[in-house]
Length: 263
Image 1: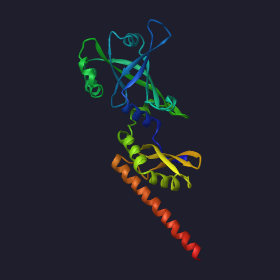
Image 2: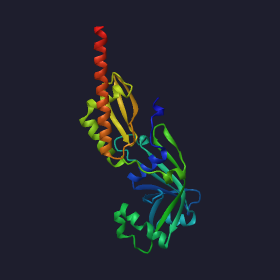
Image 3: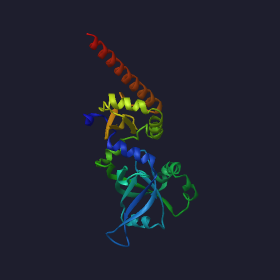
Image 4: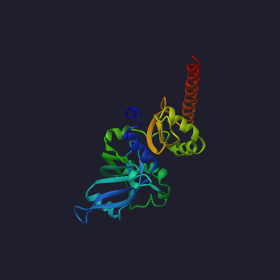
C-alpha cells in the first residue's frame, strides 16, 4: 500500500518550506482596534531551532502591537504561480515574539543578514530591533487533503530535506530528458502496467512522486528510494539503479515468457 511508503514528516516538510522562503505574513493583535488581527509583510530568518528572527522598526504598527501583546502568528506560503494557490504548501507558526537585546541580539545579527542582505542598510539604526518568535505550535497544509498540527518540539529538532536545493533541477531534468525511463518506472514500480505517460512531480531524500496516465485515467503514486539520499548525485545514482533494475526485470520476464511458450 502507498500509505506504507516512507515520506518526510510534517515537521521536516515545514523546516524545508521555511528554508526556501524568507518572507511571510505576520499577524499581531491590534492595539488600536482591540480584538482585531493586524497583518504585515514580514521578512524573516531562522535560528538553529527554526525560530523566526524578525528585524522591525519601533515606528512600525506591528512592533507597537507586539510590545502590548507578544502573541502572534507567521504565515509562510509556497509560491503558486500558474496553479491553484490552495494546492500550495503553507504553514502557520503561532508563538510569542520576544525582543532580543545585548548578546542575544548580537548572536542573531549575521544569521539574519545572511538571509536578508538588504537589511545591512538599516540593521544598525537605533530604532530597529530584533525579535524572535518563540514557537508554541504550528499548522501545516501540504496541499489538498494534506494537513495537520506539528508539535513545536518535533519542529525544533527537524532539519530541512537535503535534496530541496536541487529538487527543481532534478524534476526538470527527468521530465525533459528521461520521459521513457519515467514511463518504465510507472509500469514496473508505480502499479500502472499500461502507463503511456509519466511525470515526476516531487522528489525528496526518501523518494519521489509520479503522475501517470493510462488511457484517459490519471493517477499519482509515491515511489521510495532503496535508501535515503543526501544530494543530487546520490539521487541520480539511485534513479539510474532503479531504471536498470526495471529494464532487467522486463528483460527477464520476456525471456521467461518466451521459454514458457516453447514448452
